Image (cartoon, rainbow, N blue to C red; front, top):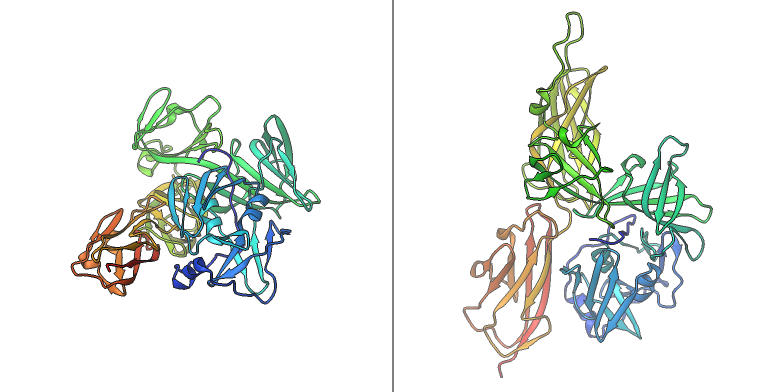
Length: 524
């Protein structure tokens, strides 16, 4: 993902029910279901003025595509049934009537198709999720679709006025003043700048666009060099701040005077302006060693390397421990071990328990890599500290180290790494190409049936989880499965008529995707 970043965040998640026959019927002229009253759309808390309100079709809420995209400042192009849009994070394309969209070259399954009705193109809420890496919600009781967007148009100026009042400030963070009251950010874009004050009422979201993780953050999580989009109310008050950055994480395998190499082969060459820290303290490149775990943070728009955050495990840090205290001084604070409950990748809503054994009577916290730090732990019994982290939506990490921290009074133990790591995935697999294609008529009574799939995160597909059903019969045992596809060749003739195929696939965290499609066999 390269140019400027954005996201949509709403107060609740949409339904994730798989598409079924009732949704497919919407492609073939099923009338819209009449709501009690006209469904409204709100973007960033303000009504969207549209003559084409959302419709309920096949049990799904569909929004007027062009009106919503226009409100977000995204240009939509259409050729025949194919629709494309150039996004700040890449591109999205989809075809009218299809249950699939292509986002940055990756196939993403939708829970309802894009449809044309009465001269207007309508799209399911999940298309917004797929295209923007976000969430969207329909409040059935209020008859309202609610969207909060961190991206509303692109402009050469740092600040852009919004229809109905308020403004959007977007660009690159040039300065952070944490000492002012309230603290402030200076945002620069195309030679213009804008300084905004961030009160405690402002909601802060941080997003690592590399691992598709978006978390509720705080002012302290914002860094100079990050891309940012701030939403201001009409009175100038900052409502939301969305901070975006790219990251690469890994263990150092080699260090030279000017660069270091990660185990995946990436060479990282810090610039003179790159901030380097080691275990929370300022450091220089020569301070880094083989075996250190680092997170390299860069600007998502320019690619400029802004920060290197390094962590060193206890064994290495112990070599640099302070001398033995003099008689009469308090004994050193120590951590004996840090243990994790997770033995497999976790999904949204599941929890990681962390247990730290160390000096009693202290204050303990744990860190999940350098993404989440200072998570509180309780001393449940003398010297035994426990903490829990529940995986939120849009949190995708792979083999991230977990560290324990312990201090007793003014004495702190070296940060200690748990022997295990944390992997989590909240984005389900995507089911892509299928054959025979949906709606196609074939003259072969034994057609080859297959589906491809992939994992948007680094958590792999679990091949043993993939199942294939044909006309209500589980044919998985006769199919060939791999990490990327399942294929089935019928051993007997399938009777003429409609054939319904169901594919289900899960990743190692247990996130599941389902695709249902039909084709017709006509041999005579």
